[in-house]
Every structure is written in structure tokens, then in C-alpha cells.
Length: 364
Ligand code: HEC
Image 1 (tube, protein in one colour):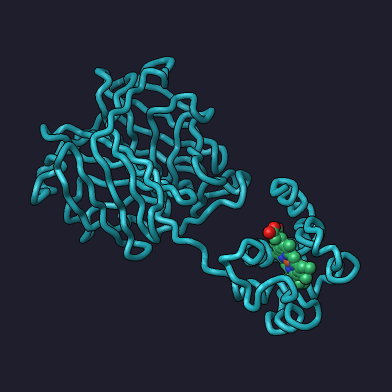
Image 2: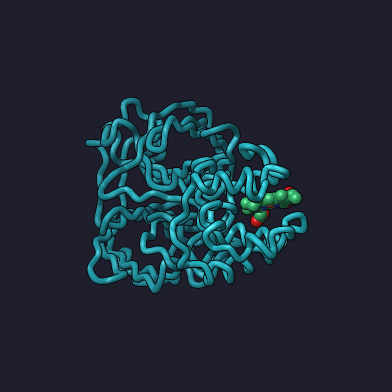
């Protein structure tokens, strides 16, 4: 039902794309008096009720209202009137848009300790889709070796997300084929992320009985994009900002490793989480600069640093060693190749965005 509605919406959208901007004041009169939308919908619409919630999300465009008239039995009364009145549709949509709640905050991107730079050397990426944040945390184990942990954190309260932290082992990054069945995950603790606003929060965790709290903020190295739920998979392909969690294509074929692309301005800072030749966790980073349309290249580094639980965490003790190069070549916003050389091993992987909630997230 919902799917048919979306298909109809696309057709209708194509026909009304030239409608002029609506007048919300006139739309209010249409809503209350002319068409008496209030005989079924709230005045004002109440987002806590399903019918009104749909009106607030779908009714902000003329096409959305036409779609409702075409699909909802109770609204057939408008088939011969409102449905073909472009001006009334656009004024009503403009009025409904003034009532719609602001879009939910999206926290997708790379975060690090606050204040910025205070603990340079570790970070945490959030891929945020719907009410789920998939976090990948890049830090160091007690011996100072690179360690990464991942967590699927579900929304538990407004602005709060919690989940179990996992450490994984798997086939070496250069295994051909990379067999996802050989990846093993071990729960090592849990984490909670709470946001005080769109750019600041707290990351609390317990890892093997170490309990700590870190103030975190976004890592800014260019123009920060803003991210929101993708309307459809077509909007992922159309995106020209590539910030997201990516993995091998086709989706799921090499589940167990991934790469977070953080795209600010013309720079992509990528954190690649995979496995060393002995199957232990390994993470590498690259600051890739744009070298041609859709092409980004840089040097891959592997780092060692203070253990995750060090207090203070001294960024001066982080040591980065160049191990090779990486190049990302985008065919479109959801389809790329990741070519790399690591310690002389050269490989190329097709990658795509990892979708785990709704249609995913688009940044721009
Ligand atoms: C006779 C009752 C009735 C009237 C009058 C009415 N609606 Fe609705 N409307 C509904 C019902 C029922 C739903 C679907 C609610 C549900 O699925 O639970 C709905 C849903 C919607 C939706 C969401 C459609 C979707 O895609 O899910 C929009 C938009 C909408 N109405 C706009 C309007 C507007 C604008 C008016 C006035 C021009 C109006 N409605 C008048 C009954 C009505």
C-alpha cells in the first residue's frame, strides 16, 4: 500500500513540478473553511495521531496531497475538485509545511574527543539511519596497537542511543575471496551516546570492566555537510557528498569489514576497519584529496597510540606510519571503487553504501 503510494507519488510529481510557490495564509483558509480538512484531521494536526502524522509528512507538497486523494478512500470527495486545482494544492501544501515538525537530527559523520584536537589520534564514526546509529570506534588496545570496536546503537530516549560493543576477527584484508562466514564477533561491553545538540555529545562505555565517559564533538576539516534520511535509493545514487559507511558491493558479499567516508569540502577522510594478516583487527586512515571529478587519492596510514583508557590520552604519543595509498573513484553517489596498496599488496574493491535503516542517509 505504502509502496504503491510512493510509485504514484513519483508519477504525480513529474506532472506538477512547475507549480508556483504556495501561499500559506490562503492555504490555512482552504484547510479550515473551503475544504474542511478539519472534519477529519486535527486543528492543528496532531503528530501523535497516525492520520495527522501522515498528513504532516506527506502533505507538504502538492503531489503528496494528490497522492492522498488518489489512495485514501475517505478523501475521494476531492477527486473532482481539489485534485485538479494546482493553485489550491500548492497553497495547502505551503500551509501544511508551516506545521510540519522539523526533521529529526542526524548525527552521521566522524566525531572525536572535545574540545577538538584534545585527544587527536582516536575517533568514532556514526552512520545514522532512522533510529539506529552504527558506531565504529577507532582507538588502541592496552599494548598501543590499533583496535576497533563496533556497536549497533538503538535510540532509547530523545537524543540517546545505546548498544553492545563488539570486537571482531576475520579473514585478512587481502583474502580472496573474503569469506564473511569466517568473521567472529565477541561482545566486550556496551556504549551509550547522548547528544546535547547536533554537534556535541557524550560517549560513555564499559569495555572489559573499564568504564569511562568522553565528551565528543564533530571532527571538522572542511565544510561540514548536513545529513538527513534519504527519500529513496535513487537519492543515494544522485548524491555528490559521499559521507557514509560503505562496504564491499554487492551488499553483504564481504560483511565484516567496512570503510567510513567523511566528506567535507573537497576532502574525504576515510577510516577503514579490516583485519591484519593474522586476522586481528586493523584500522587504517587516509586523507584523500580530490584529484579529478569523482576521484580522491591519498596516503594510507596505520597508527599506534596510548591505550583507549589512558588518562590523560596524550595525542603526542600517537605515531602514524605510511603503509601505502588509497584511491576512491565514484561512478555515482552509491557506487565506487576503492583501490589501495598496503605494504606492497595492491587490490581493488567495488564498494556501496551500507543500508540498515529506511532508505539510508544522504548528506549534502
Ligand atoms: C473524510 C475524512 C478526511 C478528510 C475530509 C481529509 N482527510 Fe486526509 N486523510 C484521511 C484519512 C483516513 C487518512 C489516512 C490516515 C491513515 O492512514 O491512518 C488521511 C491522510 C492524509 C494524508 C497522508 C496521505 C499519505 O500518503 O499517507 C494527507 C497528505 C492528507 N490526508 C491531506 C488532507 C488534506 C489536505 C485535506 C483537506 C483538503 C484532507 N486530508 C481531508 C481522511 C480525511
